[in-house]
Image (cartoon, rainbow, N blue to C red; front, side, top):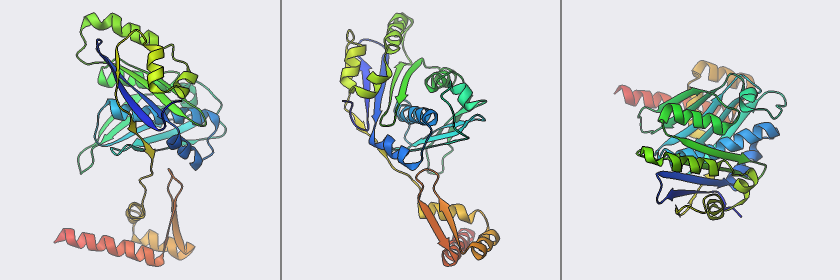
Length: 290
């Protein structure tokens, strides 16, 4: 059986290529517990969750990675976030009961957005490309071709229990003589079946795919589901609405309730809470002015 909630890196000892394998089970099922996703949406969201973990390791970025699809089709929004602490959260929005279709039909006129946020007040990097391809794997391969100029191949799959993925990437400094080797690896990776990707552990999977190659498999890194919402962040968001609107809403409804779109946790703010939010903001502004 595949390892639980883990990512393995691997390297071809004599070839200019590397890769990663991810299997998510508990973390992925926690995402599914938050909403009743239709099968077509669940499939793409699971693939995106596995892909975001793969990308966070492939890009080797120490910050918050957000993989997002914005579209006008039945599946209109998908967001996956992976933190430097190797935690993740994910959600999707859709209309009606989407049927299984190629990605470009499911999402319509869509955009793929990859955001890398280093935090600490530094500017985030954002890559935006049109959503191309029949699958999310093809769309991400197109992204790497356009934005990173790195030949990259992905295999992604998900069901109601597991989300998994394989990323294969040619090294940046590969010489022209390695072209035949890269083509061979691409061809072998294309034979991987969804059941194998979802069910096999990393060592068995690599042995089955690349049994004639010398592959070094590194120790796995664990990933887990964790939502980054908090009462403090919710209060900061409410403050942006302005004192007049906040007080009016509390007068009319007795309290303001805010549900986290990712995990569904509800934060309630009554009149006393809102007064505290406004007083805290005023104090911060006073400190800033002085």
